[in-house]
Figure (cartoon, rainbow, N blue to C red):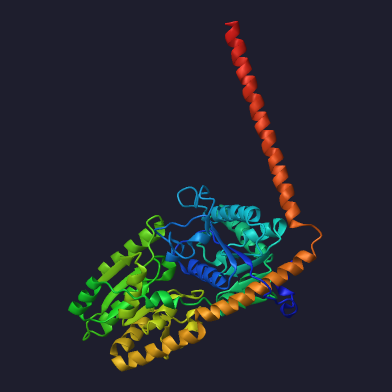
Length: 475
């Protein structure tokens, strides 16, 4: 069943014609996964492929510019299934609702985009199983990280344990239906193999995300911020991440507190914590309050900035003395690349994706996730000369250009699309049934069931109307 594990790519590799690529993502918000999907969409479009992006939600106030009205990917966007809720019972059953939404997207794409050459899916793999039965397209799954490792669990709840066992088993089972599986880092590849025993022998292709350098170069610095910097003159330490607990943003405040206590002769630099913030996300609201309370308790002056614009983000990256990237075991992490391209020093946790993007001591610093380790790195940066910081910044930018460019992503993405199509065609040639016929049978049965239900309803209504008239006549 696991096609990707047993296919000789060299015998079927081809780029004979443009493809029809359909990218499916459950919720196009603001995050690393969404950014990567849009990068793949851009690469597909530039290569001349026909493109569709299908999702159940894309809020114009909480999405990337490319898919906002007027954006270059907006004409390719299809938002369907808005009527399916994202959660139930006051924020519960999010995974179940995501599964239902993806099942609907799989059915919709199989019906409306039946001539697609390849479906590209990420996050949750359920549609792979559905497409395998009702679609003739090739199937490519991009795994950012095993979903079962991203969730908080309550070991005391038997109901939740049973619920998660079903969802986790479904994730591993459905991934095996992919013709090709890609991951965002070597760290994610090893984690997937350790987590899913049935994928031990599967070939997992590492496709690093690229950095959108064009948007960073459109660096519009606000006049008010320029004036503020001239009046202040202190170094600025920045954190750029969503307001989520797994991002460990309190480590920035702990490092600042350590620096304040251990380097008393130096003044504390300006601290700015900025990033994605959604009022509809309970965790975002609660976590920001926790950070504000912690900063007040430690007497650390911090500027919190919510849902900043692209221009403000680029401005912060350029003006910062250093940027602290605090998530532990981050799957890849696009922020360090943004920092490095801006020739700013990045201080990150020595685990996960940053170990593959940052060369410690050459273009940034990798530290253990402790207040002392981050505090000492902060001290090193602040005590370095401007020439030393500039040299490290130049080395960082050169590394991004060499290993994480959009040209590299486009080239490797083309290879993966071609391989996925080849494997998919080989799989289809060996099937004893036609997925298209299966879809037609299901549609016919659905129509018959609907027709039967409607006739029964009409019969009941007619009988009720006749009964009412008969009673009225007798009266």
